[in-house]
Figure 1 (cartoon, helix red, strand yellow):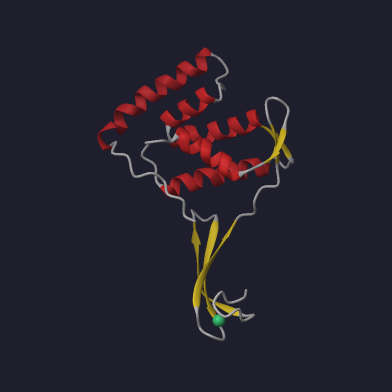
Figure 2: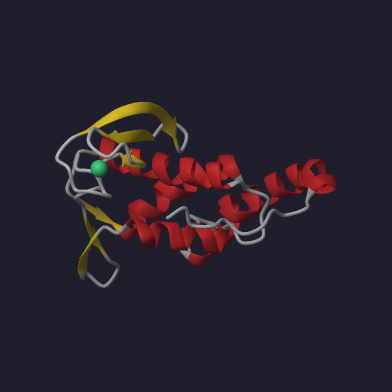
Length: 168
Ligand SMILES: [Zn+2]
């Protein structure tokens, strides 16, 4: 990789470590000519996926949209930026595992809910009600009961952290 300071063609890696819950690698580099130091971050490949919307329209998969939906569901919930990243990565890995190039918004919703319910029940219910994805009244009832059980245990330390800030 070229030096960002002097544009010399070669830099050496002086340190590398995992970031974002193991889904990315941060590398410290140093220019072989001017010794300038800078860092690069490598992340898992962006998904090459077409999302089929409810009305049949197609659009390219965008991580920002997934993150937007999750942020809305997790608003004011006690969740760290790290957990948030991990959640996004898990959903993307699930999408990748399907080994198909197309996915419906409903399928994405199901994958998200499947992951979200292990992270935060309130967010899970918010997300599910937005996507109207509860199969039936019974499932919804179960979710609410689960919430009632877990809410009591988590209430005392319910001071929400500051909003997840974008890292870039
Ligand atoms: Zn340089």
